[in-house]
Amino acid sequence: MTAADVDDAAARLVGVVETTPLHRNQRLSAAYGCEVLLKREDLQQVRSYKVRGAHNLILQLDDEARSRGVVCASAGNHAQGFAVACASLGVDGTVFVPATTPRQKRERIAVLGGDRVVVRIVGDTYDDASEAAVRHAADTGATLVHAFDDPRTVAGQGTVVAEAFAQLGRAPDVVVVPVGGGGLLAGVVAWLAGHHPQVEVVAVEPGGAASLAAALAAGGPVDLPEVDTFVDGAAVRRAGRTPYDVIAGAVPGSPPLTVVSVPEGRVCQEMLALYQSDGIIAEPAGALPTAALGHAWTPEPGAEVLCILSGGNNDVSRYADVLERALLWEGRKHYFLVEFPQEPGALRRFLDDVLGPDDDITLFEYVKRSNREVGPALVGIELGDPADLPALLARMEAAPPKIERVPPDSPLFTFLV
Image 1 (cartoon, helix red, strand yellow):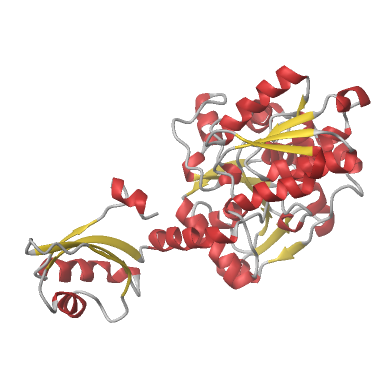
Image 2 (image 1 turned 120 degrees about the vertical axis):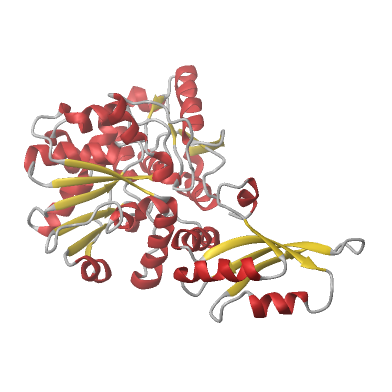
């Protein structure tokens, strides 16, 4: 992989993929005392940069390879780019996605691919779908269009940074890149190594799927024992070998690289800020770069920071979960098991004696048992200020009912979030 591969891909994709806007973000720039620029790949036709890699690979197949068809595995975004490429180039394709892929993404794949693409749901993770796609390619002779572990895909994805630099007309100080399998990051690193090796790169992984950090620590790609699939566009159990070789320094003159991870709750907090303050619908993976600012990595004052907002395929039905996770991350939302005396006025006394003036009950599940003196209730409380928690716990300790806090690592918590 070299910068020339990315430049060739950029020439190949002229008129094929859209040139997405580059916007200065006022909220983030003011918050961190620097210039924060967002490369809006959420405004691509398929609402993610993945169309670049898929198109670049399929465009290079000869007629004989196209006649055998193509296949891919995806958590959703790569499949949409794949589907557009199949439909526009007249190639039959098969897509394998895990069951955790949001319905909105599955439906979009089918619409974009039309009668050229068949969607199959396999397993619970991207890696389950990937194994099925590899088997399909071996059985049918179809070309595997990998989401990140192919030089042609990597080169196509790297065109994002080449396009952004051309729009800016200069090199920024830092480029912040979301990381799943590593394809986008590898394309960025390869292109910068050839053209702007002084530019710092910050790679941001989800805390529950930090496969690149694990690979760098082990000296090569390794399987993570567990993966949190919430950041579905970046929830990859094993980093790609092709991206790893580029990222780990196989390309001469590679730019300085920092790899960080961001907890899923912080990602949710940033998704809400992007929506409420900036009017941007970002999927979890798309919010990774800006979620890292001020948390996992803080820019130097006055620096020019380019963040690649990689996608906006977020099912609106997920926002309830996003809000819940954000409140938990901020320390505003807490759950308790309360044993209420089965007598009139018990709830009123709890409200008067325990809750603060700005606190709110967001969940109340009560089981009344007439043959017992107490009845258990599951109570969710949202604090007006996270700093009010010690006072709330002190009032609970002094209150007559027996109250037990439900910790996030409790099995019961999985029924709530």
